[in-house]
Length: 251
Length: 350
Image 1 (cartoon, each protein chain N blue to C red):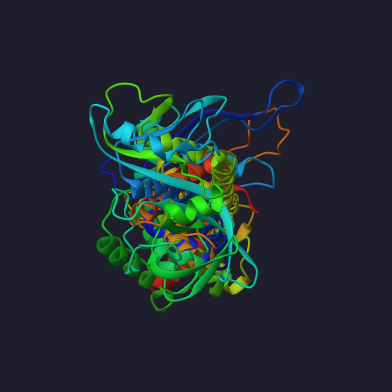
Image 2: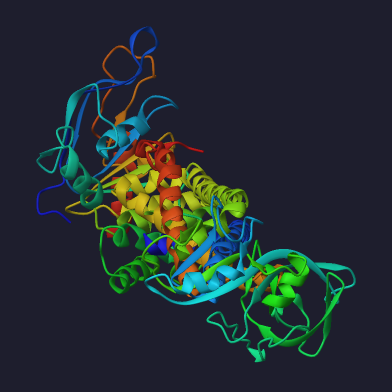
């Protein structure tokens, strides 16, 4: 993890695809922030720019204008080796379709980000197995993705995203392909990931994430030409539920 | 990247094995044709070496002893011996003919006539050299054992010796007989020869004879086969291209199949160069394994060819090295598209 606080600041972010009359702006003049140790949930309908937002945060997409600052560094100002370093060492990504490599075992999928950046095989395997144990898949380390359920694949995807201990964890629709029971597991997992030195950003249209969100960003429709509606606090109902749960645990 | 590459090949084992098999088959054909091409060239070297000598003397205006029927008079032997620089002279006859007795019908052969006791002396691997009229030594390719009888132009020849590697004109075996016998067959018994093989270098003209070096004689011997050898070389080159195409196609299809994986890897911070390296490694592995299989296959198939195919260790190594390079180049050229995938596509939900 990084020494700097995992604070995120997004200022006047606009993402545009195409030029002229046929251009689309899924994100327009978006401004929000999230502090270290929190779970930020970006919600909105399909096509509202949730995935584009994650791609910008990951350094995979260059915005038309605006700035993104994470842990005191301008992500939108990075290029070349610094951008590569950001992807390798700062960001962990959980993709909507899991995107596990089918030819690799669960352990090898988790090891891959380490191996591809020069970590020795033995060390990579040890860390991968530890993480798989943590997500409850220690006994499936040798299984290929095709032999795992959707929920298990999702947990492997989380393990892969976490193996480099990223300060910024991005999860794109992590419950989209899961049944209700598995959704609960993912919600628990995301909630457990909350901690100092890390910011978790979840893009979803699944309302149940409001239960684990510390703050959220509501994104507008894709054709929006007005600033996206933004709220950075959890909704009152959720705050009430959470307070009630804390009370239960406390008593 | 090595683990990821090898695992992918394992994952696509069926396709990889099929591609490897096809590549190995094509490469083995290329190797065999290349070796056949080389064999045709090497046999001319061996044939010229069989005669020894430092110079050849042939009739004036003649291209060479193997491609012309214009003889020289053996009566000139003494005159040639007297030329300054000449230490010995051997009149020889060379021509094409057919024999009976080697198979059910006629067998095409090259015939060499030599003077027993002269400088040109066949060295059989079994038996002995012909010493008198009615005796012959034959190349083992003719398939006639020592003690058998051949018929050449109605004359009966007892096989007294067997030689190895004495073929020319595209693997045609040779029958070695005495010059007297050859004169009876080819020159109606007249005292003629195709050429003089001379030890030493004549300093000065020898009547109206033309002097040729052994390399000139070798080139003369190769000329009738130049069309065939060129065609063999061309087909071998085309087969190399086909092999390269198969390797490239395998790498390309693999690249297309894995474009989502590549996008994910790039999103995880893997460089395009590193991805390319993995696919190049895959091409190299395919090229290497296919070439080793091809050499093995070629060694198995070579004896089935009706001519001697000299597949040397050097040929095998050359094949492996070239196949390795072809695999690497084919890998690089074919996967530049798939590896340049936009990492942001890893977010696409399909």
